[in-house]
Length: 476
Image (tube, rainbow, N blue to C red; front, top):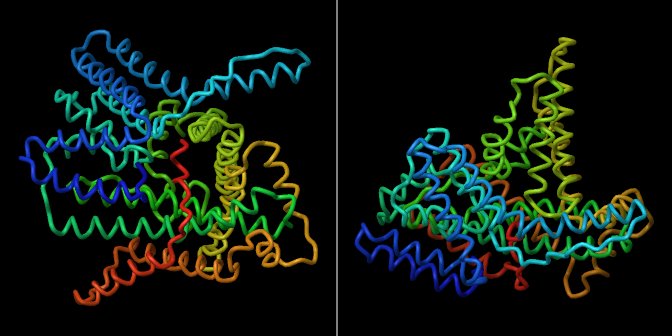
C-alpha cells in the first residue's frame, strides 16, 4: 500500500480510530493486524517471509538469554535472515555476474536466472530484526517475551517498507508502554505527514520528470543538461526518501510512537563523512555499529582502517541494490572517505592549520554537494554501460540551450514553469528545514498557523504532480 494512494488515505484514519477505540492493553493487536494488511496489500504470500523472520528471531532471542549455544542461535538468526535476503535479492545478480565472467574468459555456460520478485522492504526489516538478536547476544537488552509486541516491532507499518531502521532498544520499550492518544501529537504528526507529502509529490515527482527524460536518452543531451538532470535527481531522491521518512515518523507520532530521525539536512554537509552523518542516518549507524566497529573501526593500523571503510561502503552499496552500479557507488563514497582520512593524516603530520570562515565553509558545502552529485549519477545509472554513456556526455557542449533541449524532450510541459516551481519548492524545503534544524519556532498566533497549514495544503493540491512515481527506496 502506497502512502500517496487513495487506499492509504482511507486506511490510516480507520487504523487510528480502531487503535484508540480499543482498550490500551489490546492496541498492539490492532496495529499488528493493520501492519500485516498494509504489507499484504502488495503480495499477501510475502507476509510469510516476515512471519518466518519474526518467529526465528523471537525464539533465538529467548534461547540467547538461556546462555547455552549462544553462538549457534545467533548464527541461526543471521543465516535465516541473510539467507532470505540473498535468495530474493542477490541470487539473480550473482548468477548473471558469474555468467558474464565466464563469458569474458572465453567459456560458455548458462546459469539459472533466479528472477524472483523482490519483496518490498525486505532489506529494511531484515536489518531491523537482525539488530535485535545481535543486541540480545551482546547483552544490550533482554529478550522480548511478548510474541505479539515483537511481531509488531518487526512489522510496524509506518516504517516497515522504507525505514527508518529502528533499534529494538528504542522501539520495543515504546510498544511495551502502549499507545496513548494525545491531541498535540496528532496535530504535530499530521503536520509532518503533510510536509512529507509536499516533498514527495511537489518536489520529488516534479524532478523525476526531468531526470527520467534526460537519463533515459543521454545521447540526445549535452553535458550541461545532464548536470541539470543530476541536480534534479539530487532533489528527487532527497524529496522522495526524506518525504517518506517524514510521513512514516508523522504517522507513528499520531499513533503514540516516536521513530528515529533519518535526515539532517544532508546537502549542508561540509565533507563526505559529514554527509553520511546526515543522510539515511539509521542505515549509517547500523553499518557503524554492526559492521564497522566489529571489524575494528578506526582503532587499527591505517591499512586495516582503509579496508574497514571500503568494506562498509561497498556493502552499503550492495545493500541498496543488486547491481554493479550500486557497488561502484558505495566504493566511490568509500574512496571519498579514505581520501579524506589520508588528507587528514597529511594535514596533521605537516602541521597545516585550517582556514575557518564563512567563505571556506561555503566552498566546502558546494564541493561536497558536487561530489555527492557525481555519486548520484553513478547511483541513478541503469547499468555500467549506461553509466559510461552518461560520463562520456558530460564534457560534450554545443550551441543549443538546455531549456530548448528539455522543451523538446518534454513537449507536454512548460519547462520554464516546471523549473521555476521545482526551484521555488526546493528553496522552501531548504529554508523550512534550516529553521527546524536550529530548533527555531516562530511564535505565530493560532489563526496564522492555521493559514500557513491551509496554504501548504492548497499548494499541495495545486502543485502536486499527477503522474506519481513509486518511492525510490521501495526497490531496496
